[in-house]
Length: 331
Image 1 (tube, one colour):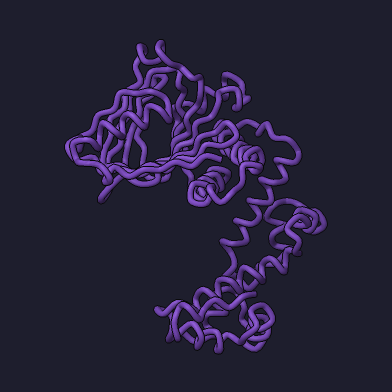
Image 2: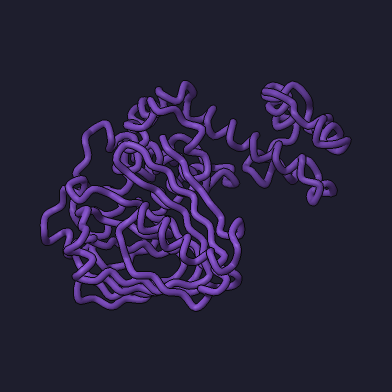
């Protein structure tokens, strides 16, 4: 695992853009880069290299990027770049396609083809997540690749939503992982990339049975987290929504060391604990906070909370009101 990062504000204004260009060329596919903000280019990069992949988070004011045939002849690493524009606007011309991008859009680019692109800020800056992938790691047919390259798709739902969430968490916390975790982390990222791309290209995802199970588990967790406020959320509703039996669902959670009902209960209690510690919610009744997260029986909530955290909800709220140093009550 190799994490690097820098912020151009560490440099004098006249050195910021040249430094960004040089560092970007080293880390990714070589391109010509221009910007309307070259005189004072305030930007940042955080990049994680692991298991043959490079995941990068970038912020910048504006960019114009061009990968020319000459640059391709000079240096072609034969990679795909999967770009997620997380904030701002943009567009690319690539593989005879011209498309516009908005925040939340993915687009796949091929290092062996010329490209022109632009990004502009919405507010103070634009931002993006980028994954650089060896081309051979996307084992799709030529027809499927043609449906993918240069064709945007949204990160709002499906496998693309799971991928976007996973990349954001990985870039934020990847350095906490050991070198021994590299292969497993790369496998997890590639499984989600394959699912997202297969859905965009409308072809089956080329996943191993184990990878398919991991992706399905991630999908089921996301489903449940989005519905914690629903008192009717149960293992049965999760199983029906994902077209599997209750037995299959429980088996999927065996590696978690906890049953599905217990997992839902734990996540609800964590959300309640967070809200009880929020000073902006200090006037909200405890039973209303519990109901917000799907626990409608007040006395039952108090028993569950004390069992999980060692104090009642009211006691916990009083402790955290004293100060943050007193709020670290362990499970």
